[in-house]
Length: 73
Image 1 (tube, rainbow, N blue to C red):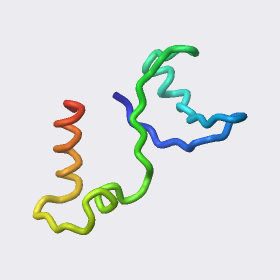
Image 2: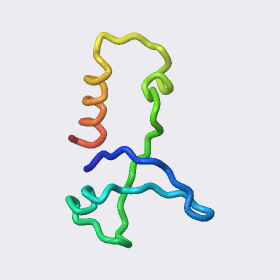
Image 3: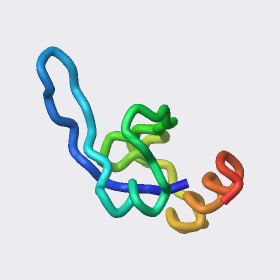
Image 4: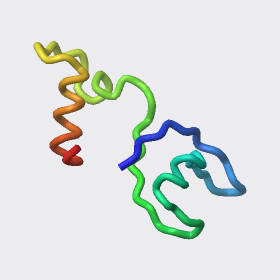
């Protein structure tokens, strides 16, 4: 799994994202290949999802736990 930050661009009547060349090379991707993408809008995702609840755990620790549970990383 690779995480990149990119922008949405308008291409004709569609929208697309750009995958940096170094990621394409590192992962051995080729034009026309299918890939899975998980898109998360930038912003305060935790606040937007859960409101302003207080927790004793740090946000970084909660995100790492969520990543481990969801993506086994």
